[in-house]
Image 1 (spheres, rainbow, N blue to C red):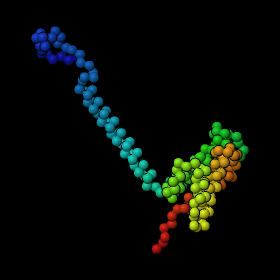
Image 2 (cartoon, one colour):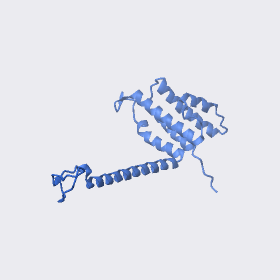
Image 3 (cartoon, rainbow, N blue to C red):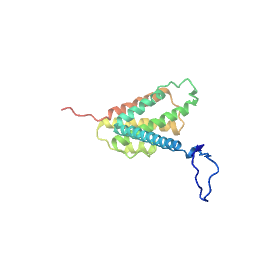
Image 4 (cartoon, rainbow, N blue to C red):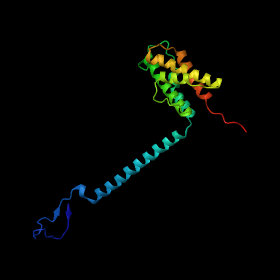
Length: 194
């Protein structure tokens, strides 16, 4: 309620009969200031989130392909080293599906690494296409041939698990996991000492 103490003529030239009238809360100055402050707070929060997202993305971009791949494999390590020979279910997932998920993630990590590290155009390729590509690739050094053979072995093992329904033993998963780590470590460029 608002009391003006003055009599004001309306548009018809008549005096208002009420000295007090109601002003809705959404028309008050306090509400308008609160809306402005709330809007500024929302904009600041959005700005903070965008800056945080950008910095995170920038830090990911700065990582080398082998650092990113080793980090991703480290996240996959608890799955790889789990003993699944004696159980039918792991975390409510059948062992075979668990193995399929593991090999799906492992092959995705290797695809991304080979693409980022060697610029192979294999990101959207199937495992079998990558295997054929790597077998057809002419690699002059024996060390590089061994590395490519290990990658082919891991991808073939994953292919047979994912698509042919082959049962997997823990030793095979651990061997392929360790082989993937070894492949990445062997392909890290060495800086020559002066």
